[in-house]
Length: 177
Image (cartoon, rainbow, N blue to C red; front, top):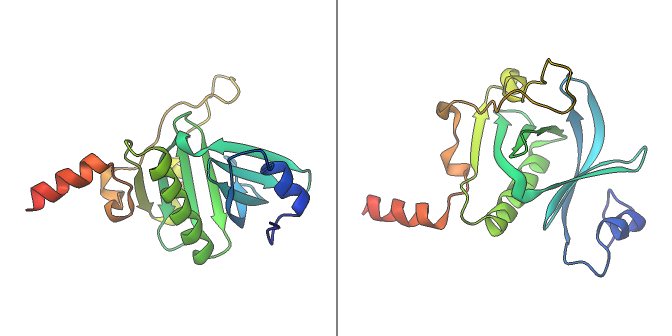
C-alpha cells in the first residue's frame, strides 16, 4: 500500500512482506534539535516503532514504541516532546492540530497494546517552555550523554489524556463507587 508521503519503495523497505510490523500513520513534521534548529522530516508510526525519515538523504531512524517514558505537549500549538527511557528525546512540530491529534491517538493506542502494565504520563506545558523539558547535553564532552530526566511538574499533567494500566482503572472504579 503506497502512502501519500512515502513511495512504494520506501514502504517496502520499512515494512517487508515477511514482517509483522505494519504502517499506521505518516505525518510531515519538523524535527527540532537541541540547538533549536529544525529540519523537515516524515514521521511514520508503525505497530512497533516510530520512524523519523529524512527524504533528502534517505536516512531512517527508528525508535521502539515500548521505549517511550512520557509525552509533553505544547498547550495550544502543534509541538510534542517524546521522552524515552534511554534518556533521549524527540521534539517534533507537526503541520497542524489534526496531524498532531491523529499521531498521538495512534501512538497512545499502540503504547497501551505493547505496554499494558506501564502508565504513560502526558503533560501540557506552555509552548514557550517546551525546550526546558529536554534532557540537557552533558557538558563534560561526552557524546550522546544527557545529564538528567527533566520531567515536568505534576501540575502540568493531563490525566485525562494519559494511558493508565488496567490495575489503575480498576482501582479508580472501586475508589469512585
